[in-house]
Structure formats: structure tokens, C-alpha cells
Amino acid sequence: MPQHSPAAVIVLAAGEGTRMKSATPKVMHPIAGRSLLHHAINAAAGTGPEHLVVVLRHAREQVASHVESIAGVLDRSVLVADQDDVPGTGRAAECALTQLPEGLTGTVVVTYGDVPLLTAGTLYALVEHHESQTNAVTVLSANVANPTGYGRIVRDAAGDLERIVEEKDADDEVRRLREINSGIYAFDAAVLRESLARVDTDNAQGEKYLTDVIGIARGGGSRVAALTTDDVWQVEGANDRVQLAQLGRELNRRIVEGHMRAGVTVVDPETTWIDADAVIAPDVTIQPGVQLHGACDIATGAAIGPDSTLSDTEVGEGATVIRTHGSLSVIGAGATVGPFAYLRPGTELGTNGKIGTFVETKNAQIGAGTKVPHLTYVGDATIGEQSNIGASSVFVNYDGVHKNRTTIGSFVKTGSDTMFIAPVTVGDGAYSGAGTVIREDVPAGALAITEGRQRNIEGWVVAKRPGTAAARAAQMAGGAAEASATTDPAGPNGPGSADNADNAEKES
Ligand code: UD1
Ligand code: CA
Image 1: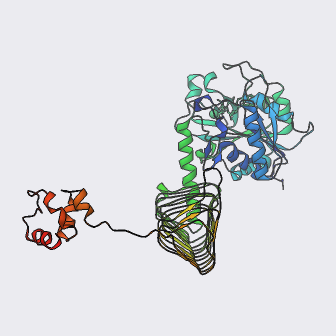
Image 2: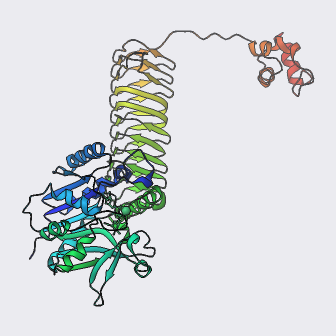
Image 3: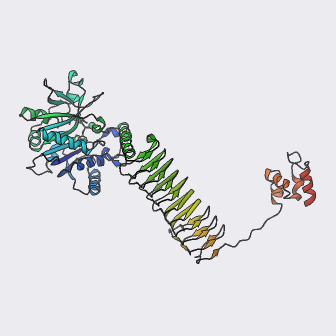
């Protein structure tokens, strides 16, 4: 029984990707929350190779540091090989070999950094087939409707793989072939090394073609074969932004379907976008128009949406999140958020807590059972348990120079329109009156109110805003008789009406 983890996987990513027309290297463009290269390296690493090498040239430093961070996420070594001035996939593979032990034996897989839907399972099946057939080279091929641009698989009369011909080197007969080279291969390490040394650049593009290894190996008496895949998406590369979007949609479709098969209700898969890193428990319900970006973790019974975007956010068991934009936040079990809530990084809502409508939070720990129901900004705050923050309150965290914290205890009830001028502390069980501006600490159990008595200037509207609807309404209500003389007598509610006449008499 052969052991099917390859000795090495080589990921080619030296190309420039000019058709992306981007300042960002092609392989660093993301779909489903990970770069193309991250998807490719994931698949490669998933086969458990002893060595994993990525070949770079274009934007070398930027991509190399990206490779390093991917290696960190995967917690394994990923080597970088530099391609020199000689162009072509063959040269790229040859440069990768310089990073591998000279006497390496076994299977070497070659794949591309811009092929994001390829899975470890497919690579593994390729290696298994390659080794069980004792091939020297096995090419992953696919039959496609439009083969333009691809290398064509040319088979001999017996149907065996003979060679691969690039589009630019092909005659009309070869161009009509619809079996294409995916660019993904399993090689015997020694055959690859020896054949690459003999590949020249004598072709239409003046490149060292990796595909020439097939003809050379076969000519030397080695077994070469093509393994056809039915899943063409898995071998498709992203060359421009149209393909990037197509691959992104298909990958999303696969991810969403995977969650549904694992017990997640997704009401509208078409408008649901879930990144590869999301973890979603069974019996979560996702309503239309939801995006889960990055490493979201959604516990069972939670309901998300409609129309919510969460990034790197944890949602507890049975929580409800409606029309919300949130990032780097933690929503407790049984909590409710939204509609129309904005949770910025560092928001932590406790069990059964509430962040309601038109509420913005940032760096805020809101305790279990605490409610912030309406029209409020909570920034840089710690609030205890079972407290209630009145509507339209502001945690005034910025003094123009520094950000300051507000600390509020448990069982606190603050009135509507309370301003917490940080740094400030409100003790357990304290209250505040509506419109309070809290500049000083409030002891436990105290009622904080801001003095500033209300004064009513009688008749002001009718006197100063004559002829307005408000003035007329005031007169109808008997609010300001002395100003009736200035009212437009032709107005619909002018002094001709009985009520107004009465009021005028009463109040003058
Ligand atoms: C190559 C194959 C072709 C196959 C197609 C599948 C060769 C000669 N041709 O086409 O048969 O149908 O892939 O997509 O192999 N790269 C390098 N260094 C280079 C050139 C390319 O690392 O010098 C990398 C690119 O970054 C990319 C991959 O190899 O990830 C494929 O390059 P690309 O130019 O798209 O493929 P072709 O050579 O056109
Ligand atoms: Ca390509």
C-alpha cells in the first residue's frame, strides 16, 4: 500500500497576473475571505507533504511575507523559491527543486497559486492514482466547452497521453481538442528533475514549458497518464476580475451548501456570503442578505439577519442579530442586537443583553441582561449586569485629545439623554434623570440630576412666529391669545373661527 502524502508540493506563483490590472499581486486578491494563494497553499498543505515550496518572482517581498503569514496560520513550514530571469512554468518548477533535498524521492505535486477552488482531496486522489498506477507523470486534465488559451492534451491512437501542446504552438487540429491541461500534476521526483534539465525554450513563447516534461519522460520510456476531473471549477484559475468574481461566487455556493448540509438553515443561499473561516453550528438560521466575513463563530439556535454584515464576530447560543453591521465583537447567548445596530471592534455584549435600534458601540463591555435599547453611543465603557441605559444617551469618550473610559455598575438605570463625560464612574443601583450630564462620579444608589430649571415663555410662538401652523395650533389650543391680532385673518384657522375668538377673549 503506497503512502499517499506527497514528498513535496510546489505551488507556482511567480507570474505577474497583468490581466488583473491591479497594484495588488494577483495571488493576494481574496475570495471567501482568503487570498487565492492562501486557498492554494491550504489545499497543498492538506495533503500532508513533507515539503511545501512556493515559487515567487513578481512582487516577491510582498508575496513572500504573505506566504510567511499563511505558514503561521497553518503552523507549518512553507519554503519560498525565487524564479530567475528564465520564463516559464518549467523554469519555475526547476527553481523550486533548488529548495528541496537533492536526492528527494517519491511524488512531487505541482499546482498553481491562482487556482482557489482546488481541494486537498482532489490533489490527494491525483497522488493516489499516480502512485497506484506507478506513473512517472500524471496530469490532471478536464474536458471543457471552451478550451481557448489552455494547453491541449494530445492522446495517441491507444488513448494514452502523448504530449501537451500549448495553444500558441498548436495547429488547427490540436486547437479543436477540448481536453485541457489543468497545470496540476504529480511527478516522480527523479523523472521531474532529469526531464526539466532537458527542457529548452524552443517554442512560440520562448519559455521553459513544464508541459514538455511529459514528452521527454514518455520518450525515455516512463509511464505518463492523464487523470480527468469532472469538477472543472477546481482547476480553474483567476486571470482577471471577471473570473475572480465567478470563482468567488462558486466557492461561496460550495461553502453555503456545506453549511446547509451540516444543519444550518440558509433561507436564501444566493444572497448569503460566508467566508471560508466561518464556524456555524447546526440549527443556526441565516436570513437573506447576510455576509459573514473572516472568522465568525455562530452558536446553535442563533438567528442572523436579514441584511447583516458580521466580521470576526462571535454570536452566542440563541442570540438574535437583525440588520446589524458588526466587527470583532462578541454577542452573548440569548442576546438581541438591532435592527440598525453598529458594533465596532471590542464590543462584548453579555448573556441576554440588548443592543437596540440605532445604537453604536465600540470597546464596550456590556454585562449580562443589560440593555442599551435606543439611539445611543457607547464607546470605551464597561457596564455591569442588569442595567438599563436610557434612550439617546452618549458615552462622551473623547475630550479632543484623549479617549477616556466610563464605568457603570450593575442594576443601574439611567434616564434618556444622559451624557457620560468620561472618565466617570456610576455606582451599582444608581439612577440618573433624563437629560443628565454626568461629569462627576455617581455613588451607588444615588440619583444624579443636572439642575437647570425649565422656564416657559407663555405666548412666545404666536408672538414671534405669527402665521405659522404652530401659531395657529397654539391659538386653537388656547395657548397665546395676546398675539391673535397679528394672525393672518384670511388664514384657514383665522380669528373668524369661534374657537379662536373665544380664546382671544379669554386670554387678553
Ligand atoms: C499553463 C500550461 C497550460 C495549462 C495552463 C492551465 C505551461 C507551459 N502551460 O499555461 O498547458 O493549460 O497553465 O492554466 O505550463 N508561473 C510561474 N512562472 C512562470 C510562468 C508561470 O510561476 O514563469 C505560474 C503563474 O504564476 C501561474 C501558473 O504558473 O500561477 C500558470 O501560469 P500561466 O501563465 O497562467 O499559464 P500558461 O503558461 O499560460
Ligand atoms: Ca493561467
